[in-house]
Image (spheres, protein in one colour):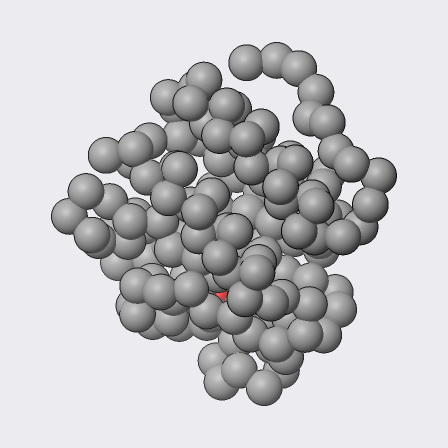
Length: 162
Ligand code: SME
């Protein structure tokens, strides 16, 4: 799929999500390859929200391995249960961390990250197959709204891993 993403001229997140979701849905449905789609999804989220780091880690054996992302250099492997990503994998649920320095075991890939959200992507049997990880340079940047919208997005990605 080619084309551009059309965004409203606002920083208001609910308006951005409302405009983005149908476009993300179309993009995801147009390409069955998970790596290609994760790459474009990270690019679109970066264009829309400009967070510090946006990307995916895939479950490979007993570790999460870095996948497509936008932003600075990142850790390539995260063990099960470690850091925010490994914990979201272990618990199989979205983790919203308002202050990364207050999260025991947080893995600091970048000193600029202040808050973080990690949303798991589930496979056919309910197992976690990947996570979407987003870091913000602002403290307390993520709300339940982000959690909900990003969970909807990650659900759209699930068929690519089935
Ligand atoms: N902070 C994450 C590691 C990944 S980076 O943020 C890109 C964690 O604690 O799992």
